[in-house]
Image 1 (tube, rainbow, N blue to C red):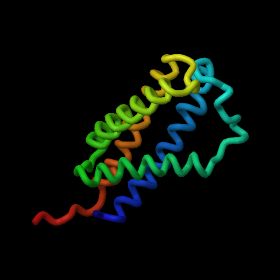
Image 2: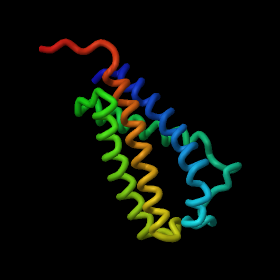
Image 3: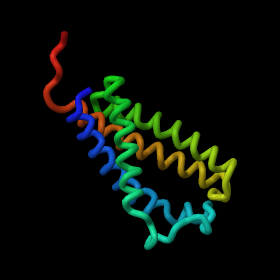
Length: 142
């Protein structure tokens, strides 16, 4: 496995996820999601644990990069497609399990919004990672 591409894709994916999360969840959907989530379960923004937020974003960037390297994703289009599908399936699974076992989501509307937002983030971050993996010198064919 190309360690340089793994690191580069992980960093790019983590940064894109962090920025998109701030824009999508922190600005565009904040008020809408507040109506559909249990506020008692949420930390106030001033009490957020930033290192964990950053590590989580980098972790998902690493997951996508690892899967993309193993499966030969090396363009924006293929990265967007694979990233969107992975994000959709992961958020669908996690959100449904959280909805069934916790009181975090007050109703299914919040869950649907979260799945949609996560999928959009996966498309864009996956595309960015795919571009990084497709850039540079191509390995020699054997």
